[in-house]
Length: 430
Image 1 (tube, rainbow, N blue to C red):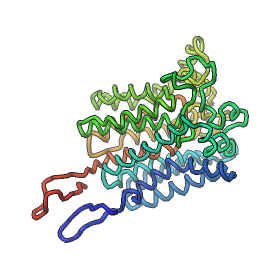
Image 2 (tube, rainbow, N blue to C red):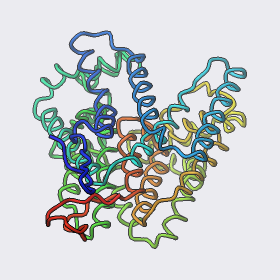
Image 3 (tube, rainbow, N blue to C red):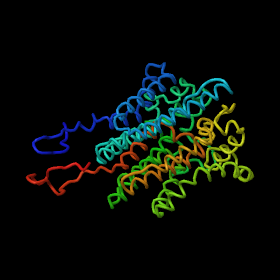
């Protein structure tokens, strides 16, 4: 059924059903298509990395086509200049190191496309409904995975899917019982599960197929719950509880600690919060270069946060001047260090330019600056240990929500009604 939007005179503007609205379709496809491809690969096989890349390209292009009429001329020039800059870096790397990698362009287009999709959202009620619907799916599938892991992997053979894509070795799959390689905490690992150890070593991935993305999704839900609570002056208990459930199921120790940090950031004065967030990438990179030498005397490289910091710093320490500038491709794997991965594609100049652009984004209300700062902090801190903030599975929703809040279009019920309108008529504030 169609919902009534704006009533004006004798004309009634009908709105599409929630499930058929472009924003709803785009966010659901972005969040779920990897799980769908995993299902196809499990049942029929043959789904490689090209299918994943193809789906991402089609989705991003479709979103950009949809939002194109809303892009102002200055934004168009800025987006074009950013793409040309990254393309030039890719060309330089191809000349110096051989081979061409345009993945950084994709990494940039995800936030651009989905932020603009959020800007075009009809109102915040749609964003609320999208979050609630995806949360329900994630928890339902997650509980099923936790209770019936063997049945789950017969439907979603995650290990097989990542092996087919070339993103996981066969020896790694033998550790995880057809789950992702980090889907089980190793037996005898120090501390084992970090959150509620009685739940066992299984780390739930749900529709995200890998625990780190599930934990990151829990953080995104927490950011939304916090933002909406402060906007509406009432606590969104349901979303907070759901975020906690998802983070616990994924055993995301980073997620739990980061949510506590977000509470502190949210209640800082806006000017101080912005200054802290602006400086985070600088402090993070300096920390990665300086701390590992000290930490390695007391800790070892493992899957814990400090162990990942040591690994990330050791990778960053290998970078040459050309690699810091994004002009040469590292000969080593950078995906375990988000900043190394980002430097390799964007260069230190690119990171500075894009971070400045993010922190200069304007919105119509203070709530936008809150969610922008929290989203930026999420990126800056998570990049210390992983390149996962760039994944479309969680990134699409985060950037969509930031874009939606930038406009803050609310549904006003029982507002001051136009002359002649009956009580109960719904008027959309645009």
